[in-house]
Length: 506
Image (cartoon, rainbow, N blue to C red; front, side, top):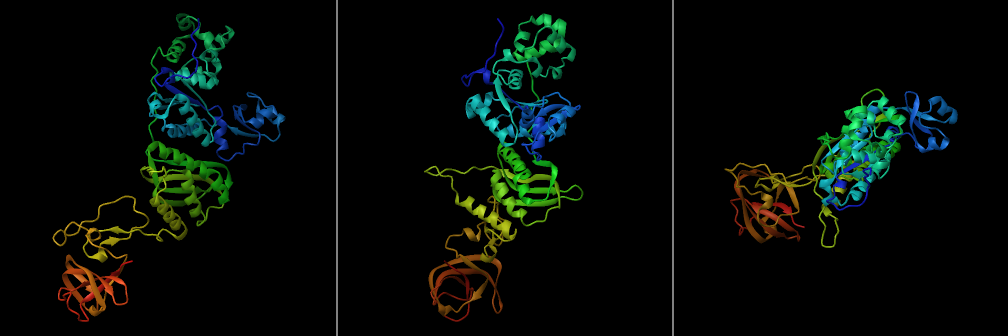
């Protein structure tokens, strides 16, 4: 009886679900459609002046694979054809493999049109092979690539099933196996055809020793790897440490709306999947819009917090794009991620909501900065200075993390920042303290002494003081104030001078 392999449901421990293969049958055509070729037109890809791939419109028109370009033109005069570009196909395949790295740490390319993933280690996390396959197919479709997924015990078996678009190895036609890439000669393929051997099931039934003598060891070794009898080591990809992609367009684009609907979403989605696979969030990126000749126009984007979703990236990019002048005709669009950080997902509250006030503020700051300029929004961060007017600074945007403050002179101050000392602090702090008559104040709380060498207060004359005594006071006009006095002044004195107003409480 011939050995048969079927694709069926098994437990997560089943060796039948160790490998997942994704086959891209329309890859040569997909790369041109991603560059802006409309799918509704009759399109074919030619190789050596013969049609090798076509879209559904071409098939509906009656064009057949293998026919000459002249024959295809005689069938449809509105034909659009492209020369096959194997280098671009492998670049797109490598980009897809980088995106699929989120499902497995062992991802390998199988030229010219397959990607293989070892999923045994991912089953406990992601579910069964069917769940992983459906999720991977949705990812490929989102990146404008049609794929066929099959899982099997060995990588070669999964590849054969995917290329044949079947669930039984016994039914796989030999012509889809790409045996020429396995070292098998075209002459031996013709000999098998002359013998009436057209499927893998018919080939497996033949004695292995006789096959080796008549057709060489390449064929028997391939069958051994296919059935798991011989090892099949795979060369896995390595995750890229930097994201940079370019999209070369078939036709120049001069309209910003067309850019936002076509090449920019395509590149933003690639960045999203790269970020998810690497568990990073994008902080800064740079768009590049290049004409046929001349320097590209660059559009830098900065986010207050790390972003992963392509919708968030495009939203801010669209706001910034309105403010720049693009080349008359854009032929190449590039996306370079210049800075990222480890991704921290939002925690859910008691009721399952992931709404975050910090995220909402960050998005508002990003939009305001995009519309009004990079210097429009500042945050407040404390510094290790006892002088209140020097105990904070205003960095641009929202701080990404709590970076340590710059240490001050240990001989003059201790290690605590003025912003962290006990006691209340006013919402409104003056850049320079203002003199205030002492008899206008009613002291409510204090004193709180802040010491620092060479502490200076600007009034009519410079007052050099080794410390300040701060009080919470009520001004006679009703305002709640933060005031201090010079060392020569005591709280019980009611003279006109010696008191300074440093801020107001809310």
